[in-house]
Amino acid sequence: MKNCMKSPWITIIGAYRVWMRNALVFRKNIRVNLVPPFIEPLLYLGAIGFGIGAYITDIDGMPYVRFIAPAILAASVMNASFFECAYGTYVRMYYQKTFDAILATPVTLKEVILGEILWGATRGLISALSISIILLILGLASPIGIILALPLSFLAGILFSGIAACFSSISPSIDTISYPATLFIAPMFLFSGTFFPLHLLPEAVQIFALLFLPLTHVVSLIRGLLTETANPLWLINLLWIGVGIIVFSFLAIRLFERRLIV
Image 1 (tube, rainbow, N blue to C red):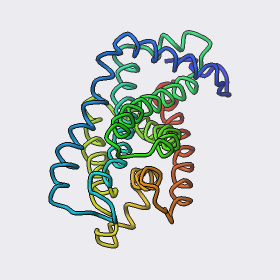
Image 2 (cartoon, rainbow, N blue to C red):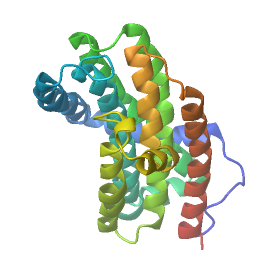
Image 3 (tube, rainbow, N blue to C red):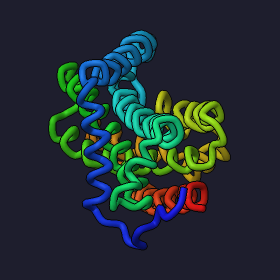
Image 4 (cartoon, helix red, strand yellow):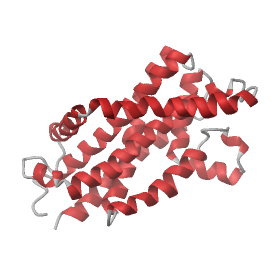
């Protein structure tokens, strides 16, 4: 692929056009695309929240189902954003040749990657909005908490999309994307304070989770908002997410340039 960098600068308009292209494709199958975000949280809340929660009186001073509800929202943002920019981006780049078609226009490769990351974050926001409706109906979150959690979900989506784009840019085949999905996403889902408090883990695991598992910080912030409890680490959580967005977005662009520009 030659002459992919038409300009050293990134424009919001170019990234928006890539985002809009993906949004139009999503709209064509909107009924199918909107079903999973509603079904998945119901399964987790039913099986784990209400099922296991029937044997647990309370955890951190609240019913178990209310404890895990924010974590399920955060995990759904992670899954939707990560898999959209891992498998989805790889398919558009390698199999559908969508990148080639877009790069034949004035849009640059930087704008393509930024548009992909923003679209991945949008998929995470759609998932968060779907689960928020369910949590409001079940009385597991306050309207104010939901209003504050949705912008945070979009930021978290940018973070997870940037991480996924990094993996997608270095994967030699679509099969190898299963490695980060199994070795990074699945452990993070279990050990980021989702189903039990982080302080129950050994101290070394707690430190590892705070330093290297981004879902830990997203769960901590969203749980504080939805349960209206004090979060002493909120500033550290926000700082980790902000730095992570910058680092992984920049790294994803650089890795794609190294792969696609010859």
